[in-house]
Length: 166
Image (cartoon, rainbow, N blue to C red; front, side, top):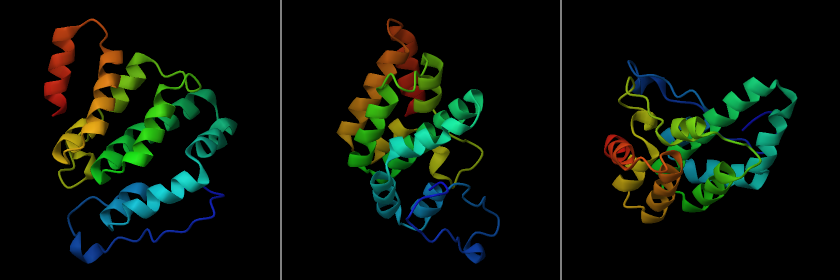
C-alpha cells in the first residue's frame, strides 16, 4: 500500500529459492508470491481503493493517469490470479466509472496487460486468461463486457483479442 496506510504486510521474498528469477516489484505481487493475496486485497479494500487513487491527485495529471492505469492493469491481473471476486467487483466498478475518464486505449491496455518476458510472474497471463484458468465465470463475464466496450462494432477484432487473451 502507499505511504499513509495503516496496514503492514511482510514484503520479503526468499532470495535463495529465486536465484535467477525476477523479484516482484509491487506489494501485491509479493503478497501473491507469499500466498497472502487475500490479506493484501482485504487490507486494500479496508483502506479504500478510491481513497488510495485520490491520494495521487497531488502529482501531475499525466503521471497520475499513468499510475492509475498501471494500478488497474496490475491489480486486475492479480485479482484474477487470486480469484478474489469481491475485490474484482469493486475494481470493475472503478474502471467503468466516469471519475477516471478512461479512454478505449486505456481500457485496452488494462484488460490485455501481460508481460511475456517473465514466465514465472503472475503477469505472464492476462486477467481473462487467469479467470478462465480458475473457472471464474463472473470475472470472465465482466472482462468480456469491458472487451465489448473497447471494440464496440468490430466483431472480428474483438474475436481476435479474445483468442489472444486466452
